[in-house]
Every structure is written in structure tokens, then in C-alpha cells.
Image (tube, rainbow, N blue to C red; front, top):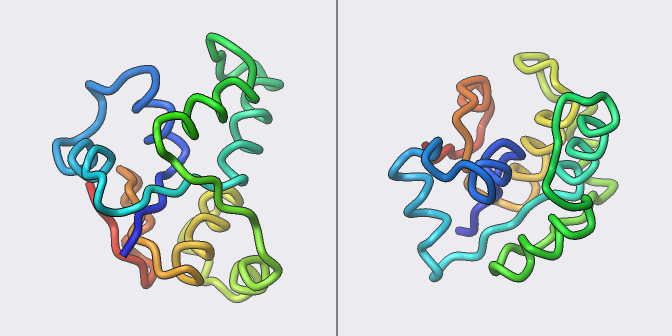
Length: 127
């Protein structure tokens, strides 16, 4: 099973790795299992930059390239993912996280996240 990194995990991995748990760090560094990041996370980062809630050292495009250069794989949004979002219980109200949950469910991915709300859904969580 591959991993899907939550947006905060991607940011911490590149900016503040000390915030990652030991299990999360190990999963990211494993190398035997692919680590995906969602285009939804890229969108979320862009929105937060625009709202001045986040600042990156470079552009969003440079951040994406850096993730890919470190072996992370970009996961597109499929219509099936959005269909899953439409039927998910509202345990989590964040639209970006709901899409990540749907992607994890649809692609059989284990989510690397510190967000406890993910555990209320049928996804495996690493933290």
C-alpha cells in the first residue's frame, strides 16, 4: 500500500521536519512504498498563500517540483474521487481534507496526517 501525504505533512517535510512524528518521518523516508501528494494539496497551498495564511520560500510551482525531486508523486483528482466526496459523512468539514480522504479511499492509500478527524473515515492513518 502506498501513502498519501496530507498538506501539512508536505509543508512540514519541506519546511519544519521536526514537527513530524517518528512514524510519519519513517513513512516518508521508507523508499519502498510510493508517497503521493494530491493536486488538492497544491490548490490548498495556493489558496492559503493568497489569503496570506501561508508563505513559501519560492513559488507554488517550485514547491511542487521540489516535492517531485524528492520522489513524491502527484495524484490528480478523478471524477470518482469527487463522487466519493459527495457521499462522505460530514465528520470533517474541510473541503481539501474531504477530497484527500476520498482519494485515499478510492486509491487504497494510507494517509500520513496528524489530523485526528481522518480516523473517523474508513482510511488507514499513519502518525
